[in-house]
Length: 114
Length: 114
Image (cartoon, rainbow over all chains, first blue to last red; front, side, top):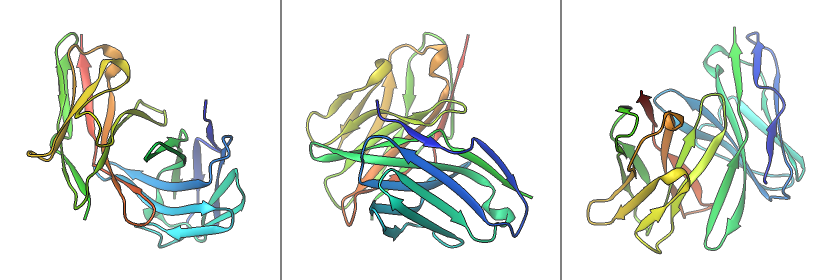
């Protein structure tokens, strides 16, 4: 079974702090993603990495950066946390199955910024 | 542009009765469509996917969805609801431009009553 793990289930940080969210996958997938999930908005893509040291901005990259130094690990960084970044953050990795891709999600990190 | 609209934010059914979760999509291409489920405090799990093969797609836990091009719909159904089906469900379309990113609907929360 594919496993995607995230370093914390719950996190509370103060405004202005630098925050690191870590994600690890164990299936040698090349592609990894970070989303945020907010009620009524579904999931929105923050950043995508298609290979080690490669990244692409998603739909809402402002206020975030990412790091992918190793294939299995994809980190999301909030340089200076703000209250509007309070949200659920989900990491995913994916593999190609036939003509489509299948994404596997981690359990999420609920971040509260006070 | 690709998009999905989930027509109901909340659906409530009694145990043993049918489930219908509605989804309309918009796509300039032949779409790949998915339904994901998220149980409380869990990550997202793929229920089923449509990739231009059979229009009636069977998924896990007795769920199925029918792709109707003329109606641009991909509704999720189950003949008989179980208490364990209570969760949030997301209709998702894949955007084939660039890196096949997933575009999520806003979600439908399904409540199942005894």
